[in-house]
Amino acid sequence: MNQTDLFSNPFRPGANHPPPHLAGRSDELDQFQKLLKQEVISDNVIVSGLRGVGKTSLLVSFEPIARKAGWLWTGDDLTESSTLSELTVAERLITDLSLTLAPIFMQTQIEMPLGFTGKAKKNKKPVGYQDLKQIFDDTPGLVSDKLKAVLRFVGTLIGSTNIEGIVFAYDEAQNLADRADEGEYPFSLLLDVFQSVQRPPGGLKFILVLTGLPTLFPKLNETRTYTERMFEMMVLDSLEPDEAKEAIVKPVSEANCQVSFSDHTVDTIAEMSGGYPYFIQFICKEVFDVWIMRMGAGQDPSIPVDAIIKKLDQRFFSPRWDNATDRQREFMLCAAILKNSKTEFTVQQIVESSKQQNITKKFTISSAGMMMGKLVDADFMYRNRRGKYAFAVPMFDEFILRQST
Image 1 (spheres, rainbow, N blue to C red):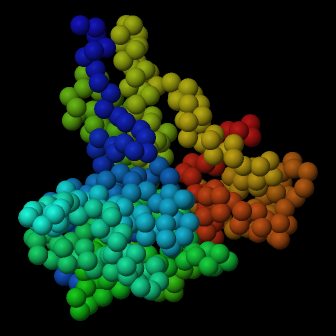
Image 2: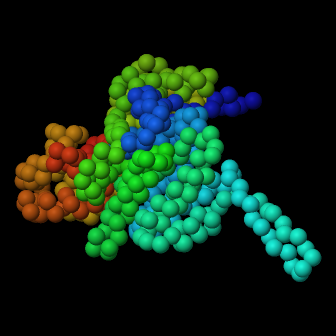
Image 3: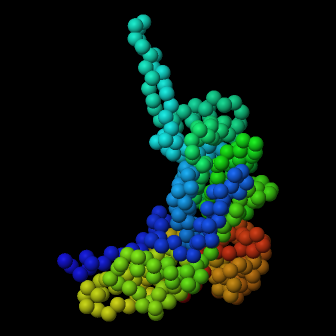
């Protein structure tokens, strides 16, 4: 057997791959378990944070907890196409519900015979998409009225079982937004429908879980005043140093790998990653693969820092940077060189920073405000509740500075 066959890399960076060990999120897992014990649903969940902070991984970790507690789980990604209108949001929910219900619930259909002597037959078929869509189409009123009717029908179905309720889990929820100029209010629809079916008496035990970028919360407040009271907010940040080290060490030890990281290596990876789970997975995978090759060739293992950073730039940062115009890049450079670029900053600070840069046209308050609005819409920046701004991509300021040199 080749020596490299004795090693298997436990790290799996990628948006659709949960980490082999979820570090530093025990408080959020405990909080979700408590929400499942609500007798009357008054609190739903929003998980918010930058890209690469582990929102999707946490959402994936919620599912087995919900199923173990007797809840059904349904949901998907809220793509831009599925959030264009009230009708597309309703279609998304009905489709996801039908996939969840079909393996569990059956209904009887009477098949009438041909001729006068045959007997009617009873056939059983799963409760599927067409059944839910028929209820939707037959209900008079607005899209919200139709969707409420579907959910109440589903509530009646599970009412005669030992199922506790249903968790509706949707990722990429920052794509939700009302479009008043088009007469479409998909975000308002979702909030109104769940508030209505959860309201006592007779409230359904349906919990809505949304995950998304930090732009999600301002959109929530813009959609309807006080709707934040519907949600428990889980704002994910980078891992603490000890948690980051746990995310590095645990997967290796749990997989009984024949390669292990020294304390110095663990410290180096934790520092390079900034404590962001995706970066930890990416860097660890690269280091692990390089070590296997070097040990197989009889060489001493080391961390190829420059090569890993270059690869991370190409895979994670560059695709976003390539979508920015030259003027937008100048603006973001002015933000990246600020001492507080990693936390939050104001438009005024960027204007002052532009005066120190070698750019042909300095930014004014007016032009900077307009530029910031465009970058927020493009998910490069986001506005927090204190009226200040921050990069929506972790460690993007460091990448921008590397490009500028």
